[in-house]
Length: 200
Image (cartoon, rainbow, N blue to C red):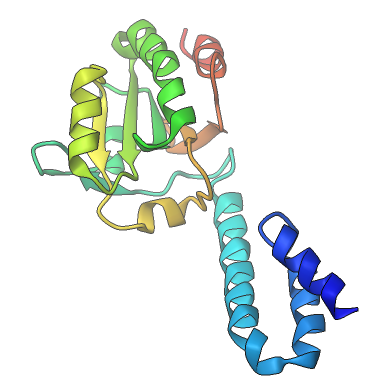
């Protein structure tokens, strides 16, 4: 029976639900506890992290207040989301978690540019926080792709953790009048459509 458990584990441990993974590890550990002790600990930690991320994600679901994050702009100055949301010129701020190594993120850029061009002068701003580790790749992309909105590089992982971000792109549309998140996970045309609806 153990060969089957080992086979299943090797084959599917990346894609299987955590509870199932733990069950398999326990089955395997029955025969060899020390061998699987680390794996079990790691899996429990992963489950904890996933649970935390889910809780955090719930706390920033639409209808909840945004949470402040900050990063450094290309000049090395600290820019907080709060100062962008509280800037009187801005009516709606789009918080965008992205990175240059993330293909779906790069594919979103034309949509962001279209939304920015259409609505920026009506009070729409983007606060894009990059999860890049290489600041060079990031500054190059911002310059070459002409990303004219607020671009910052996160310094620590707290920003993503606050929002329970488990994958990017992840985004949140904030209504500056009350600091409430009114939409999230807007992809492709969805951002333009949402702005059309809220910006009159």
